[in-house]
Amino acid sequence: MENEKLEPIGNIGITQKKLEQCEWVFQFDNDEPQVFAWTSEEMLDEDPTVTFTIDNTEGAYISFTHKQSGKVFKLFARQLSEEGLKLREFQKKQSEALKSDMENFDKKMEDYASENKEA
Image (tube, rainbow, N blue to C red; front, side, top):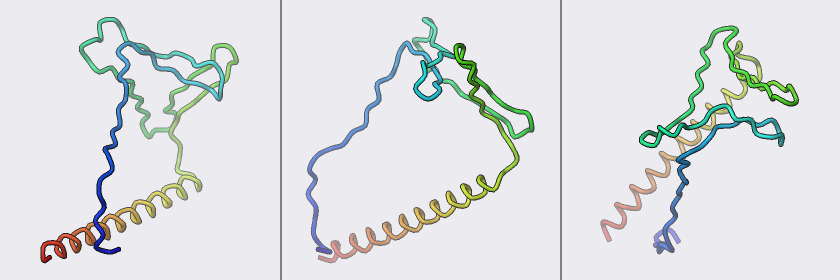
């Protein structure tokens, strides 16, 4: 099994349909999506994007209000909480585990290549 060679069975591709004329929306649960930006007719020669930047200062936020329900969706910065610390530590451990797995994979591939070179 260790030296078994796998034959390819096909190709996998990921394609995403580019929206030439589009709008950007936000949505609360399954409520009606709310439009907050859109492409103009003159934007045909560029890749339109929406980018949010919230700096790390107290009081920095972006909010959206649903025009019918009055619900507010808010993105903001705050002092790191216990939950944030736990999430950061979890992400760090996941990243370290992935790095270790990749190093082990690279080593196995090198071993495999050198074994097959000698054969």
